[in-house]
Length: 396
Image (cartoon, rainbow, N blue to C red; front, side):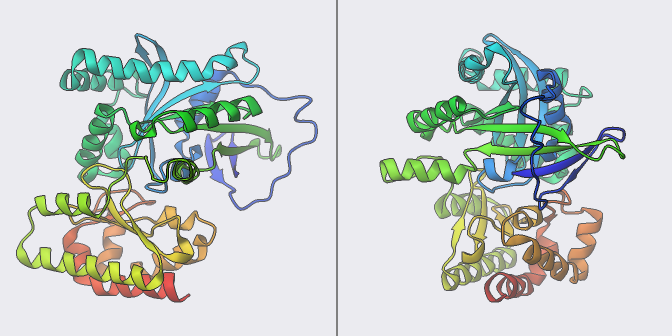
């Protein structure tokens, strides 16, 4: 569970993720209900609430809400979102007190079906035109899809996210999220049934997201907000699928898809050889450590992400097939062992002048949580980066 403090007057949200929080004993007797629209707006306006690392499979820490109230033939979709690697999220908000709570699963699947039917009826290119128009019409400030994504991750990576989104829509690879004020036992049963029964090679993993408010600091007019998911993360769903079928059905990239997409990019011979040298040394490090390489589900072959054995659910870096290096500060700092190591990793990288300058002026795109480093910035320091990774994540 993660805890946030919400400043009501200044409309700011501060993470209190390491705070041990005890629920008010009177909360169950006298719950402070908020309207479903308020819950929807709260999630949309404060994307930091959304546990995207866990739900995306630790691929990204950037969640990007795009639009609300998109009209489909099957109903009005509450929140449509993507993330830093182009996953698709369909979010339905419902209060436990609503008599329609029992229909929440059918509602959200109707929205997924509505999108799928529209793609079939319009065909993908025309659907994409319609979709972009709907995003602009239903976004907060009538921003275009490109403008929203660029604001969150920088200009350089917009096209790769758009390509991944389009491919995920084409393949019906959507993540379904029930946003509620209370995860009930019935909802858990329903989600377990769905994740165990649906052909997840079509990738409809389903989660409940519980957002609850408690009395906070009355002097400063703030409330505490707790956030938790069920299941805890995507890995839990994958493990269940593996135990049942003996293989993983969730669509993922691998070394072959990464290499295929890497070979399609244009590098000069010196650049290509140095990237391959970095990749091979990274593979050797992981082999010596007993960790593994993960490639995620993103488009264009994903990212090559080393998961060291002591931090086996998070990766500090992601090497994209176009040669850009993504520094995943927020992912590694957010895991159980990660805060100290993640902070040290950030400090050590920042000692390299060219890299520190890139972080400050954001020349490689991305965000403060996931800054990107252009090829010409990081490649001259590839050996030092490997040395830092080894020192922090293998020896400390």
